[in-house]
Each structure stands twice: as structure tokens, then as C-alpha cells.
Image (cartoon, rainbow, N blue to C red; front, side, top):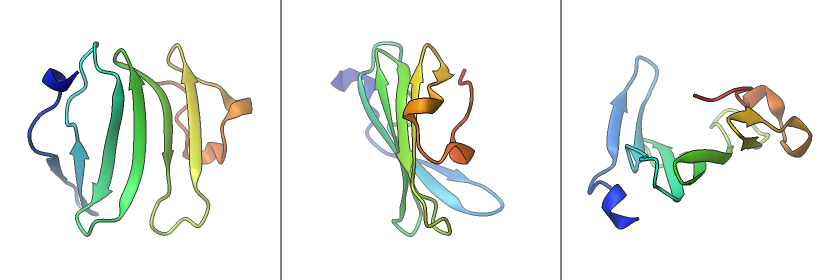
Length: 93
């Protein structure tokens, strides 16, 4: 829903890097993507939500040559359908 989106990406500052997230907050009614990218424009990952629940994550870290793709159902990783598991979280909140 468009009402779930904020107008600006959120800047997160860490000791290693600064990155942006958009939309910055996900409601339990949101269906769509959330993107995360570095301050220099390199896209880190895309997360897809259905009614506020994370269903998949895909991305590639700048220094990692292998991309990752993680599929979730009921907040648990479906490892046999996912790729490059070292980058996937086993459980999500």
C-alpha cells in the first residue's frame, strides 16, 4: 500500500559504512520490496514482503563475488530453495 511508504530512504550510519533503506519501516499490511544500498549507490540487497512477512532476500555484498538468495516461509529459512546459505539468516523476527 502506498500509505505504508515513507517519502525518503532512511540513512543508517555504522562504523564500517553508511547505507540507505527504503522503505525504512514495514507494516504488517505491506506487500512489496524494501531495498538496501550503500551511500555510494551500490545496491546490497532487495527484500520482498507479503503482508508484512519477509518471503525472500536477494543480494550481493561488494566484496563477495557470489550473490545470495534466501527464501523464507513462516519466518524460517527454506534452505533447499536458497542459494549461498552463509549469507542467509536461519530465522527472522
